[in-house]
Length: 516
Image (cartoon, rainbow, N blue to C red; front, side, top):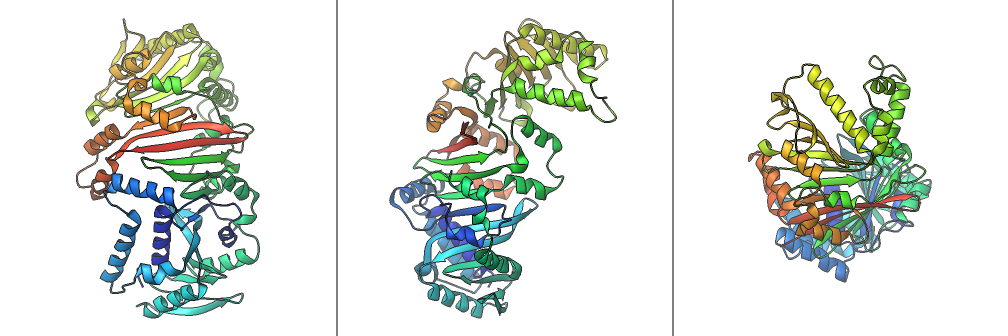
């Protein structure tokens, strides 16, 4: 039963979630009562096709994959695979008649980035028919199943993967092993994910009309990861007002006829979520950028990080309260420079490895102090004997550094007017520094991305064709997985990212625009 035990139910369920779902999840869903309260990832959606939503998904299938019905295609592939294994089944006759309205997938752990301890729960409209299907598949399995019982609930354990499968009430449940099934039974009779206030609050903020909603316990994931998450990254989040140890989020997938939208609502665990509109900065970045991001309040976050670094120092390298003191002896105040920064933009351009470049661009309200700092740093670098250092002249104030270790482009630090840029490539750095010339805000795809986000300020942008062209130049032709994905990736016109806040929750939108 390689394809017709847990694999069949999971794949069929996921196919239905991805293709036939309609409506958003409900925080009162019975399926969450089967998931352990320690669940880190929970995805739920409806299985019943719905008019407009189904039309949108099929429209996307035609544009991305050139198929009329993606759901039928996936089911046919499942049936074909089962036939090749000598264990044929008819999804329409054997599974579809008893499929209920909702299904969910839950995981309590991750290993190597992949979910483990996976539980799949599918509501049924005919529990007896579903049980008959389980009995038939278990009986025909090449690897035997054994009957088991727990708390008065009968189920089967075995098959090639050692999965457990059975009905808990009217819900068909499959788990990676007997332990997982028993945990689902315990959850149904006692404390479950549905009882967690964080889950209830998150799912209440799921988007209307979604295909599927995904709950993520961010804090739980970080705790489970141990030391795998960089302390610097965690500190940066805390500096931004986010306490990742307490964060949870819900992501909702909402398909349209020419786009796929992912709405995220997160309890960031801080006092107030980050906010601000950096769309003007983003739109001013170079028109040929294949990827670009922007944010506000950069100086405030940088100042907090510097204060903490100065207070704590770096063991073995920098004593506490030495950083600011040492910098002030150079002729400028680190606090003034950091606090002067306002918006930040980051972009990258290029079509091949040898012409890749980009820059971090910052606006400042104290250009004099920043210019002094950059001039001083440039002098110190030259005096240190570092080879390849050249002072800029004419177009901007600053310096560049060339070396074989940096590759074909120089590292450039420059300032002009109210902008500062730290970039790779002189041309790219000066483009970002000027904020003039051809910019993203003038390009059709960027305009479409802004329009797709509606009232949500844009903070990130990817040009689909340009990003794909670069990927094709960098990824070896021998990478069959990527080459198979190329025809589908060609349909992506742009990816737009927007962020904001709603009360004490951070919100974000990611929209992928799809063309013919």
